[in-house]
Amino acid sequence: MDSENLILDINFFASSGIILSPEQKSSLQSSLTILKYENKFHKVYFWGKIKTLRGKAYFIAQGVSQDEFSPLKKYFYCMDCVHWVVMPSVESETMKLSRNVRGRFTGDVSNEFKLKKDGVDEEEEEHEEMVKEEDRLASVVLDIDDDVRIVPRGSFMYTPTGKVVLNPSFKGLFANDASKLYSYMHFRPAVLLSKKPIIERSNMDRSLDFMDIIEDDIPKGCWSFQFERGCGMVVIRSLLWPGYTFFTKPGTPKFGSLYFGTGEKNLDLPFML
Image 1 (cartoon, helix red, strand yellow):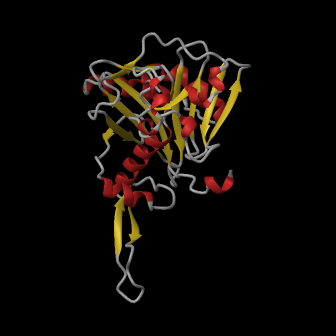
Image 2: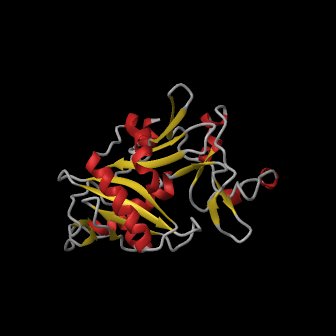
Image 3: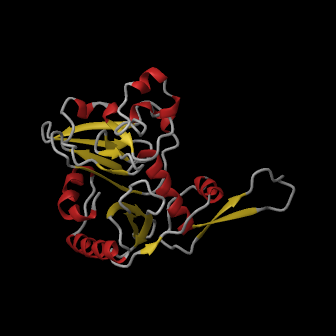
């Protein structure tokens, strides 16, 4: 969610139990504006909140350049809505280890999670690998972005110069299309698009259809759709990452998403559907 509209847009998530206190709204609005100009970002998103065991929470923000897919984007976290810290860059090996960690975040960035190494015999001395909470936090945020962060089709465009920018011509989805899976796309470089039949790809608009649609997601049924305010707003929730919520208002360019959860993936989802 664009931090510039935080105070107003946060109200669209209230039906999902996502709320902020007046103090948190004020602090976030001010601190994210400062974060944007100090780091010379084109835009700063309020990404969401990851709850911990100690009653605290990690507030997450993302700063991007004019190109939304640029590798120059950075993630930040804080616990007081004021003092932001850059998230560490994590390697692929660290992300693999982080995915094997079970349980909630503790709220202490210096905490380390212990993991037993694979392929070690029981008779041998116990071997353990350590994953820092800060690294796990960064890994979870990246995984959530990759797995479930979505945008309406047409809201972003791929320019001739290779940049991904907000589409100024986007006027919103029609009410009929807003309830269809093919109207929403993963906000990341495409993974499955190149595997589609050539005939199907030939009918696509390259400037708009450059991301994967959520209709192809596995398992089927991993998204929950709900109309609110009559047909005035569509709310989509992820069952794979409980806590991720997206909204859009058909007929208007208004949309946004937030993650308010524990940072735990629902690994049992295929057996629940």
